[in-house]
Amino acid sequence: MACLAFKITSSNRRNQVFVNFRGEELRCGFVSHLVEALQRHGINVFIDSLERKGEDLINLFARIEESTIALVIFSERYTESIWCLDELLKIKQRADQGFLKVIPIFFNVEPVTVKQLRGAFGDQFRDREWEYRCDKPRTDRWKEALSSVSCKAGLAFDKRSDESKFVRIILKEVEKELQLQVNPVVIPFPGTRRDISSLGGKGMHIRGSTQEPVDLSRESFRVHDNSSISNQISVFSKAYMDIEHQNNYLRAQLLELSERLQSLNSIIEMSLNFR
Image 1 (cartoon, rainbow, N blue to C red):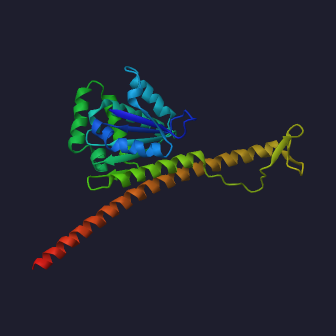
Image 2 (cartoon, rainbow, N blue to C red):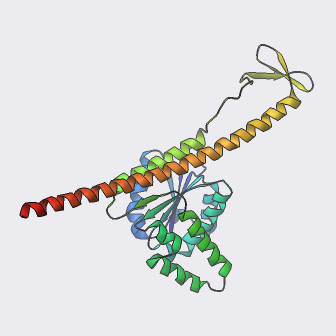
Image 3 (cartoon, rainbow, N blue to C red):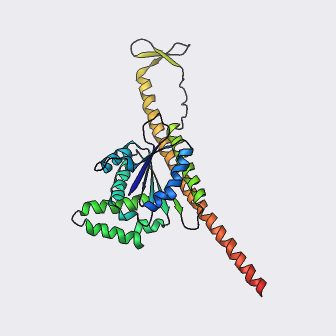
């Protein structure tokens, strides 16, 4: 098991992105390239090897709680690790509470393989189920988390994919989400002014140079309405981001299909020439 956490600036100690993955081959290959790309764009990296023995899981749970984005990298060996599965439970919990944006990454596995526990991925999960057969509620939560997270809009990589392009796609999605979180959409509301200056008499306050009195009882209704609209904007923004993630997945699939079609056409042309 290996997990990383990223933050956007060195002056801000709050972790921004938590990366959940399994396997040294990923750490030394794809994940190391992803980390390098994130670092080049000013995103610092926390690696689990820096955590103290015996406190790793607790500290990494704290990293998840401090994060606003989680990258869950599903690979064939993912379900070998109960640590990854327990972290996934925490990630799902924070996501369900609205504190965390989850981006699943399917690395040489199909989303349906994760959701339906197929192949070696599923066999290894069933080994964990047997190993922890005395704690069925825990294994049931693992299964639910795998199904829930794998159904979210994500990004897929297979052996025919270009790794450098894929890293750039992930980097773009992370930066886009972080930017959205730092600078949420703000819509001015009719009939309000931005230049609130000072308080007036009891139950009233004064705006700008017009010295216009405002009844605070009415203003409280405006604040309530504004908060409601702001919440709706947040929901729509998250929905938009989910659609964008799905669009990127479809674009990647379209590119792969186009390349395969081009290769097939080349083979057909060669066979016709031999005739």
